[in-house]
Image (cartoon, rainbow, N blue to C red):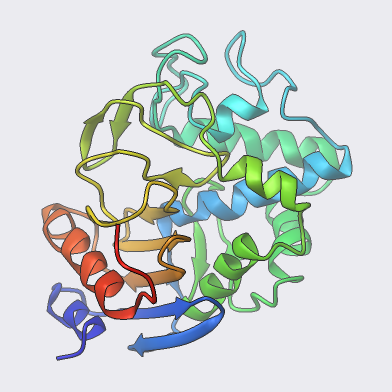
Length: 274
């Protein structure tokens, strides 16, 4: 069995994966052109659309949005204090990392109002079309309802490494810890001290346990989704990995994903893991 072939044992009716080293594909498995709901990977594309709106001058990272004291920056980094999936405010902005769909949905409404576009249309014009992500479409919530395939998500991951839509300094800010000292809970993985997050991407930092595996470098970034999907980029290993399935996230993923990612890294990295 190949390293990527392990996904066939995860109990999903569909699974596909790909690994890229640098800008060159090194392994694929399954149908990389099959479109599925990627769940919270959606937030990466929503964040990029929001950052484009910032560069265009439609809004700013410091524009107030959400609970008193919260800004666009807070919501991008899950630091606005909102509950996961309701309007309840559980903490003052900037005091805890609370992963929130609500914050991203409010952010999308704000970007729509600021640009004069429906947010799905803005994402399509600002992000999907320029990157050639022709199979991808936002079909609902800006927090969780992007439909896409492996091939399109690799195009997006490549954009994060060699940006054409955003200035490199904006991307560097997005991939750096925002409100770096905040503790929080990584969904599915429990409480984390210094629960790092960028402006959209989740950052591994020193989280342990973590879905990208114990050998992932601290600057590994990406996202996973509740539909059994994940995308990570490990710059130190010079690797990108995308896995899509149609099996809802659960204990099976907690057991399978870290070891799988570690095997990907040890097999395909041109540099020592760590």
